[in-house]
Every structure is written in structure tokens, then in C-alpha cells.
Amino acid sequence: MHGLLENVEFHEWLLRTDIDLAEQVQHGGCQRVDCAGQLHRADFPRKIRGLAADGASSFASRIGLCCGLCRRRVLPPTVRFFGRSSYAFVAALVAVATTLARGIARGARLVGAAWSTVARWTRFLHCDLVCRGVWQATRGRLPAELPVEQLPLSLVEAFGSVESDDAWLATLRWLSPITTTPLFTPRMPRAG
Image 1: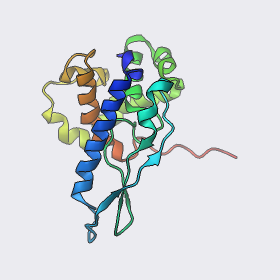
Image 2 (image 1 turned 90 degrees about the vertical axis):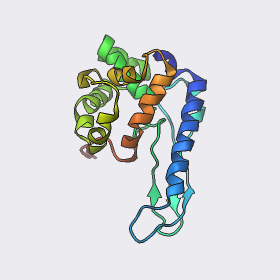
Image 3 (image 1 turned 180 degrees about the vertical axis):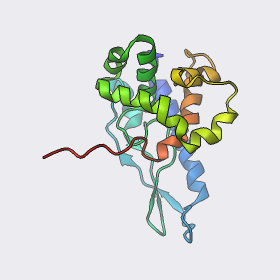
Image 4 (image 1 turned 180 degrees about the horizontal axis):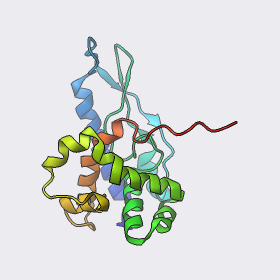
């Protein structure tokens, strides 16, 4: 499971999956009412966190789309980024899985995150995710009953072995619709 953070081949696989997801959205055109313009690719740079330095090259930019008529930006689903966070999606899931097995300190240390960040990810996966419409609408299509308190491991196991790269990719792909909107409630503004 921890090998996913350094596996360059897996990261390239995630990039190809993101390109496929973006092309599907792009072919649909702009979804705004009274627009139906053509979507053009408008990637933007990202400084990824949570991965080994040599494996981060395929995370240099997030695929974005922009309507040629109304100029609105469209974020296609992604399997590489955890919503609008600068952390890799797989790093967040591995950190939470490690937290479940070995404690929050190990999960945070593994990806170089603060304890509060990993706690927020865990709370999101165990509480907030199951309240979202995307989860409720697609939950019935999973092959097994999932214990929510064991997410993301229970979701990975629904697609195969925890040691299988294919199962992790299927999990990331299944969760990708949540990455198009903000995942967390806005934080309080900083003083000063």
C-alpha cells in the first residue's frame, strides 16, 4: 500500500486516467444553460504534496477545461488530486488507511502532513462523504456492503486486494466525482 506513493508507473497510470476523464467531459461541451459552447483544455500548475519527489512529475498540472463561449472554467473529475487540496488523492487515502491501522502519527508522517490535516481527511471519509449526494447515488452500485468506519480500506477491498494497484485505481476512479467541488467547509480566515 505504501509503495503507491513512490510508484512512478502507477502515477503515470493516474495521469492517463485523468486525461480520459477530462476528454469525456470535454466531448460533452459546456453544461451551462443557454451556452453549449466547446470546452478547451486549460491546465494549471500544481505543487503536489504527499509523494516522493521523483514520482511527482506526472502531478505538475491539473487538467482544467474552459468554455469557448461563456469562458467558465470546468474542473473534470480527477484521480490524481484530492479535490482542491495540494495533496495527491492516493496520498490522502493511504494516510487515512495507515491511520486506521497504525495511528494518526504514522499516517501524517507517511505523507508529510499535519495531524490535523489527516484527522480532517479521516473525518471527511467517515462522516461527510456518506452525506454527499454523489455517494448516496452511486453507493448501491458497489458489489459489497461497506463499513463506513473502515473507509478507504473497505472501498479498496470492494474492488480487490489492498495490495492490488488495480483496486486502488478503481477506488480513486469511483471517488473521482467528489473532486469537482470543494470537499471541506471553508476554514475560518486567518487573523492579521
